[in-house]
Image 1 (cartoon, rainbow, N blue to C red):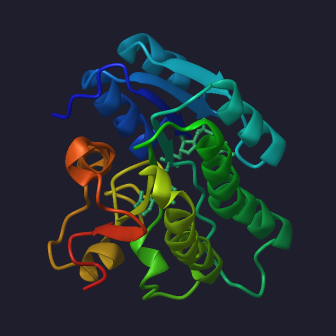
Image 2: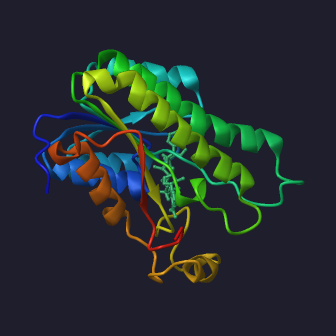
Length: 237
Ligand code: NDP
């Protein structure tokens, strides 16, 4: 447990999966949590009722919506950008519009959200983006575009860490491996292949990813910045 009492926290993409676990963890640890969602209205409302967090409908594919929702929160102590989509398949036949939309959600939203948050963020603020071990390793065909999005976050974190470091603001990427969510169910068709790449042959839970995120947002992590934090059961080893 980390004491986040009165820390104003925004989670971009918090209605389901890893994002919902982050909302639960930060709310349990005392933070004032707001989270965005796009399609999962019922899940978002249920999570808000359960945790006391505030749910805000906002599409991460829309740059103006992203910067508006960040700016509207006022000074944020902690920004977590979790929203992401995974479009996998034959590079020759995937819909280019769908790929570009993934680039909007997975790359442009984190960048613009981070910059917008930093305008008002107090000294010692935290910016954390959920990347993927696929930013380091893509051991199967069909994942090139998704891997592009997660590698791009690495350069973003390195650069923004230098932009905001003088203010004590840290910028970090959490890089999960296979994690049991709607996007990648532990009993889904890809599960056997996924665990085949791992040293510890089980999916992570969303709560484990939330735990690392909380550590990076907490007081013990104030010197950690511009870094990738892989949590993947050895998928990338
Ligand atoms: P899920 O599909 O289970 O959940 C995705 C979350 O992102 C939902 O809350 C969804 O909200 C939100 N989201 C998606 N698109 C948008 C959008 N346009 N605007 C606002 N919110 C949006 O995914 P996971 O929990 O598995 O993934 C979370 C993050 O972790 C992603 O960045 C993913 O790439 C990364 N990751 C996941 C891994 C895994 O194995 N599960 C492994 C490595 C990384 P809504 O439904 O309301 O639209």
